[in-house]
Length: 111
Length: 111
Image (cartoon, rainbow over all chains, first blue to last red; front, side):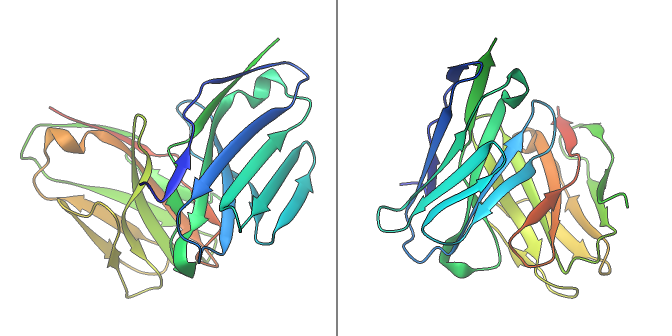
């Protein structure tokens, strides 16, 4: 079992709809959770991080963390074609000094 | 601020050749990281340096060496390149060993 798992997609979403991305992790001791966006041919860029159970909102993005069920999700509201990218989930496994990344979910927003 | 810079942007090597990938950051970050990204594999950590003067192996260190030259610079060396090392290499840096900022990447093709 991989330490951090994501559905590879593609997740196809109509413009204006909500895109829902999920990420599960195996280490119950994980403390910190990150979402990165990566456009094709570009480097990953941080869009959100979350440390506590519950929801965290930043603009059109909402991260949701459930440590008991060991998953973290990302919601993108009012999806735009510019949101089409691969979204990487990253977890600070066992509170170490490095991140473990999932394989990424490709999102396609269709006009 | 330039953030994280990497050189070269693209390189073609023949099997058995050696090369060094350079990375520098101007954000006064303590930690620096080298990843490789292959299709469908997400980001895999090769080596990292939690602070100046220290380096540690990541998930896939075989065939690579690193040098933390000073606080700003962290280089990755391939002593004898193999086709399996064809990949996109990203350098990243972090102040708090969690939130990481990535360079633009180096595309390496080993023939």
